[in-house]
Length: 252
Image (cartoon, rainbow, N blue to C red; front, side, top):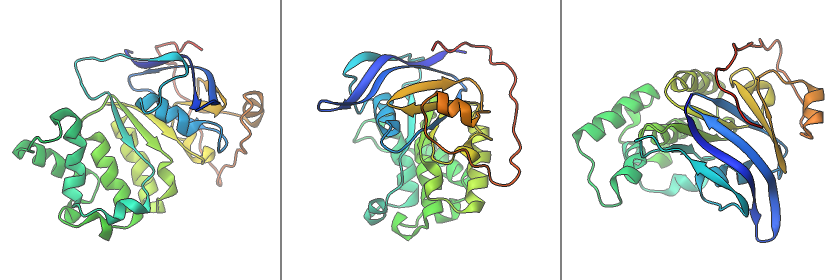
């Protein structure tokens, strides 16, 4: 599988405070990585580093472009402040094309058709002309996910997607991500280890360092060994999926 990006001995933080130290991680096409770790352990810093919002203090982040200018789509934590912005659902999704079009570009018919198609896929096409302030948290998240994927990125980054979600949408979201994973790699930051381990393919534990775990089945003792102080809680009878061998190798 082709590589999308690589973190090589990357350290990052703010001012003199080093939050992440010597991180090595390679993300390949069709990876589906769950990022777990304690609060303050560096999950958000890792996302900022990958997005290029934070420059590494040492080491490097290497991007492998492949003709497709849109390497990364990003679903941030949807906050209440977004609600006050006077913009319609359709416009939010279209705004995901901005980086490829430049600030003053006009959206054409095919852009709009594509946006409507995505709203359809997200189950919110009927809300296309609503202002985002009128939406519920779950609806808003579908719309912002639409914005993240309209440019067909090679990597989709989701930051705590299940903080805002009703149960119905949670099921739809994971189903949707499963479909999207055929076309793009996914990196998902989550608190809910029990839920994500049934969906992701591999796991990265982030607590100042990053430990990459090449399967989605992780035990409490492995978490302890990775210095990842997280309690594994499974809700009821969680079926575990054993995945076939990957055909690429991650270099630790």
